[in-house]
Image 1 (cartoon, chains in turn red, yellow):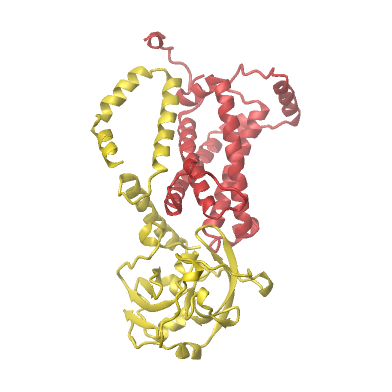
Image 2 (spheres, one colour):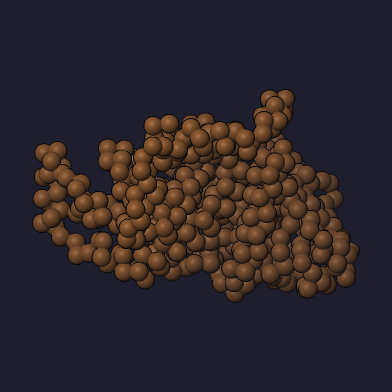
Length: 207
Length: 257
């Protein structure tokens, strides 16, 4: 096939997207997918807002099944997230890629985006919108895990329960974080499809 | 459904994958296929009712049992659930059972609580005897596995006092409950001995009404609602896993809060 005829590039420097990041990224995709779809089913058992999720797009079949999925995938989400945060910090990647943050640059990038003139010449560097939205996604997932801990073990973690305003408030926060993560994922996928080289980078490590 | 499943299995999976790999050499396309396949797999799983004993079901049940152990480890026998004030009580407190409120069964004539298993004094216990024991009250939050919660006020005998009084073997693993509405469940001994675990005889200062479990309900603010049996007919102590009405259908056993 034509696609096969491409010459393999000579081996160069370390991949732009390290293997640990690619692995944790895709494991996180799996974990978040299961958590969100089973979470919708659990929400449906006792909705906190006047709507429910159509059963067909949820995971688990019934409440007990959804809970089994949710409490299984939580380990993947938690352990994988911990590995990601530790490696991201220990390798210095976090500091190098995300900081310093700058409001001035954010404003410039927003203006360029609105003028449809935001460039992606160097994919190894994040623009300020990317930096902030990825940090936002990390923060939302951390909040998700912590509020989830309050729901799962509200008696055993009194400090966490107080910080989240009690059991019922933690439920609402858990739901709102889910909305943030789903919204982020939607934008993230659209952006990846608009600049497909980023998707290639997240799979094979090179853009 | 079973027939079409079998047809599916007969196809040599490895050959199919090998063929597919030839076609999808391009990494984008490979990724796209991979993602769509896993989405398809997820969509199929969402239709499962987890009673057909497939391998996914087995793995999920094993993780659920592992989670029971983690929860037993996380459970601090001295940590108290928060208590609330009179004004924070949820009124009306919701009725909840595996049947509707209209189907609540009255207590049998001449009701006495039966005791069995690893208990020294297996004599039947009357309500009068329970009322004669030291009474205590709590206003705590009942958390349902469905996600909702409600604050109620319960009064009765500390369950640890009761178990000591009847000479239960406190080194046993489980305390089980059989109820006259055909419900049944079981709990771990550390939770049974928790200071807020209460054999309740009253609700909101009055004799426990039929809808909340007359003649008695075991109240544990450290466990989800379905672990709190109402209409208790028999209490037993055992080392063999007794299961439960919801637990046998796939809900987790420990269900701690």
